[in-house]
Structures are given as structure tokens and as C-alpha cells.
Image 1 (cartoon, rainbow, N blue to C red):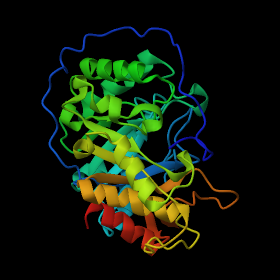
Image 2: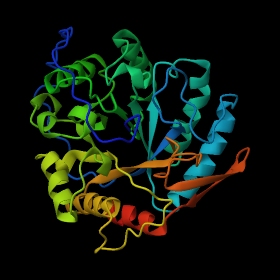
Image 3: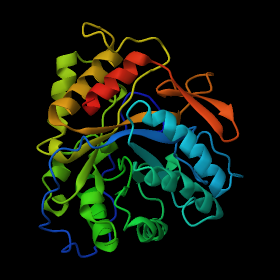
Image 4: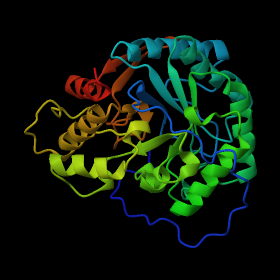
Length: 343
């Protein structure tokens, strides 16, 4: 998720220093990934306050004092409630201040609890603090982080890797070079379990889709109403489909969301509300193309006003200790997300 909800107006970085090239022959000419991605029926689990951080990522509901066993118990309680609405995938953030630390030993409970029950897990790198402007802060630390992660989970077929969330600080050519270099360097991350983000805020897949270095990968796509001016339902559908390019069959909408605590009716096909039109359009494109989706967020995220929670969050969190519960904030929103998953 972008670090603030405001009209999309930050420009992609212009002329940047040339990146050190790593041979990418290992990924050129790979076979295209299998068509259709609706096996991903997911939610993002985020830090309360968002995932852009210069410190360890402590997800909403967890405490940095938790042990691995406590994290697993909390995660299982939350996954039980997510599974009740059809969730089988969770997207989790990582950064260089989390992986390889003492907290990482506990944090891994969120991953291991998910895979043990058959959930798919998407591990996505969030830049280390919003001030880094959509660029990797420390390339060496980033590679060390990913070497640790792919060494640990490269053989686990339920774990997927997303090299970077919203790489908006790079031009299209630069980002594609960074991503291709990552794939060559981290050979434990098989292409079929790698999700390459689109350009900008992961909002346009066309250049990545047409780059043969990524033929064997999945693609990560984001679409929010606040990125753009208001549109009609039909305009949103066309806009989403256009930015998917020719790669809808291997794309996953890893972030999309809208207010779930304000009483909006996402079942109303005649609604004039821009958020309702947007969610209905995104989920229709998903269903039409048999695409998977990972809603932003299940819980966590950037608190709205003085509410103490992100009003996009699908669930309200209650309970204490390891006895945690999730309650759906908007039944029509839940049902529309399930519709997008093909349920």
C-alpha cells in the first residue's frame, strides 16, 4: 500500500544512476506461467500504521515480545476466521530490519502457521521507510535479506516471493533490470512462485508483461480508486483491464480495497459511489479473467483519522492474548470480494 491515501501525483524518478548489471540469462526464455491465478483467495495482514518502517515489522495483533509459539497461536486464531470467508492466501510484509533478527525467529510463526494449514503465503518486501521514495534503500542488505528468505522457504511450494512492493522510485527499464537481476541472483526462488510487481505503484503490468525475462513468473498488480480521478463502473473496468495488458492470466491483484466501516453497499449495481463502483469493477475483471486477489487489508494498515484502525480493513480485531477474533466489518464488501475470487 502507498504510505498515504492522497491523489496519485508523485512522479516516477527520472534519470537515475546506472544499476550494476548481473547476468540474467538464467531467466530469459523461461516458459510462461500457467494460465489463471484464482487459486489465490487472499488478504493482506499488515502492521497497524502501515508496513513502511525503519524497524521490525510487528503485525497488527502481535507484540514484539511474543515468542514463536505465541505468534503461531495468534496467527492460527486469525487464520481460522479468515478461512471462514474463503481465504486461503495471506500476503505478509518483510524488510531488512525484520529478517535475520531475533524478531524474525518469532515472526516466522505467521508464515509457518499459514503453510501448515495449506495456505499460500506471499512474502513481499516493503521499502525500509516511506522516505526512501519507492527505491531499495540498501541493495546489499536487500539481497542478504532475500537470500535468507529464499534459502529458508525456497523448497516450500506454498511460499511465494515478491521482490518489492510498489517500486515507484524506478523508471520502468530500471525496475525491470532490478527484478531480473534479483531472479538471477536468488535462484532458489523459482519463477513460477515469484510475483513481479508492475511499474509505478505496481499499477501497470504492460511493460513487465512484454519483457521476456519474466515469461515464467506471476505478476503483482495494484489498483485503488484513490490512485485516479472518479470513474464510472464501466470506465473502471476498462482501466483495470487495459493496465493488465496481455497478462491477466498470470496476474494477481495483490492490493485493492475500499472503506468497509462506513456502511457502503457493495451489492448495489446502480451505486453512484466511486468506491463501490471501483470494487465492483475490479472484482468483475478478476472474475472474468479467473484472477486471484489479495484484499488490502484484512487487518492493520494506516489508521483513518482518530478511529485507531484503517477503514479499508475487512475485519475488526478483538480478544486478548492468543484468543483473538476477527469480525467482518461489511457483509456486502465481504461477499463482493468472494465474488471476485470466483466463489
